[in-house]
Amino acid sequence: MKKFVILLILLLTASCSSLEKKRFEKANIYINSHPKMDILNRMGLLEGIIILGMNPCESIAAVGEPYSMRIIKKDPKLPSDMSSSDIIQKQCSKPDNTRIIFYFNNAFQYGNTENYSVIYVKGEAVKIDRGDVYKKNSGE
Image 1 (cartoon, rainbow, N blue to C red):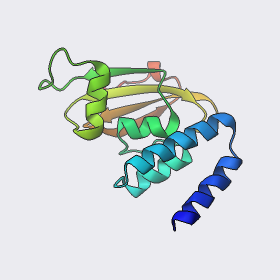
Image 2 (cartoon, helix red, strand yellow):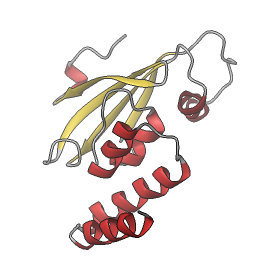
Image 3 (cartoon, one colour):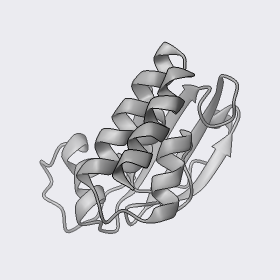
């Protein structure tokens, strides 16, 4: 089975663009370091798409870094001096009631380059908005 997976990875990697190849490699590193990951999330990472239920770390592994992110509502139990990056990281391992929005602009999610946003509640993607995300409701 392991040989089959390696062969599949090699075949898929050979047909990818440089950017896609880097994304695919990062996704595989993430998958290999999280062996208990949900199978649907694993498939999303390999395909380069964010699916509902993914945590922020899985989303980044799937499509790359967002160009912007913001904490919509911070869980009141978190320390007041906790950095945004630490809050986001916490949502990947021990989610709380924090609400976050990521803003992306890439071709991975929809096949052509465009803006989209992802809202995370309790560490899970709950809404993906396509298009000019600044004009839409940001989940506040």
